[in-house]
Length: 398
Ligand SMILES: Cc1ncc(COP(=O)(O)O)c(C=O)c1O
Image 1 (cartoon, rainbow, N blue to C red):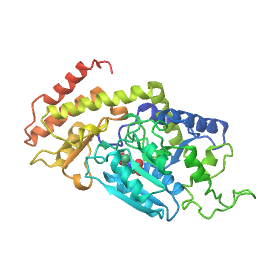
Image 2: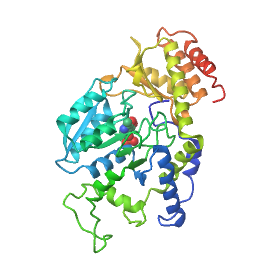
Image 3: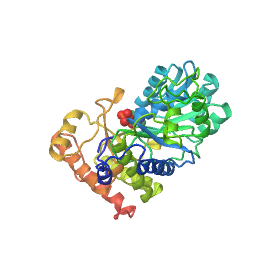
Image 4: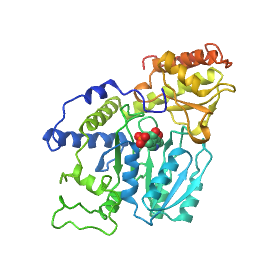
């Protein structure tokens, strides 16, 4: 019950135990096409270039940034948590001239603050995290697409923590590049990064296309702004997932089985129903920790559905509580980074763990462990508040 990775859906684990097939086996290429179509539904996009980047979520981030940005290009990164720092780091390593604006952790930017920075910096790319897992809040993206279109700026967002658990619509938001991971609301393991790219982003990436010797055709040129990574070169990756089936890398077959199953489960449930499930169980967990008398960190108006940051009560050692939750109840809750380290726990309700029984047993065990640590918790207040919320919202069957 941490901020991810979480327990994978058993269907995903079963899918990942299937036998391998060759990378150009008709079954495999059909799975690739099917996976692209499924993720178009998950991302809510018509983008042709919707595919998997092999590697954990940061491989997706790095592929997007290194493929869109050439050395010397200006990038603007609004930072409101750990993962904004990661975007900055990756853009700097790609050789970009990176400008940042920063907000206190637990808060987000107003559209006007981002607009002012865009006008001053005039970047090629605005790279912003959607839900920053480190602080549990999500930057509202509404309005940024129009702003970027007006200024001729590409808009990228990292939805690793938020996708499928919070309202999100790639095309309606006017996004050019979006990357994710499986290990949170998608209910899978880490190791594959679903991603989608708008026609505008694809044009920029293709203008840098430089196919490696050995697989290049006689007409293929090497461009001056060649993408600085071979493995994460989206121009070649697009050709691997497209009709050319360029032999760029060997698709991580087992991860593809897993990623495909994650999307199949979500599409069967319905994206809106999955988001509502995350909203409901997130609200129950929030009501439960507050019912225990604990305080919550971060601006509640922009809190993600799927994770809550709980202030560690005075006199309680956060890691000792986490240790006993794990040892005695088999339940993991999360620690925190940077300025929040030792100050808050992060409790997730995401993917396969966005379930009533998981919420109630976590609250029951948290109460018992906190009591042993001398924290003044309200007896029965956690499970009681969550139970009431489930009853009020008529969701007994979920
Ligand atoms: C918002 C966000 N971005 C990026 C990452 C990095 O993901 P990974 O560890 O899968 O590379 C994480 C991981 O928790 C995350 O929460």
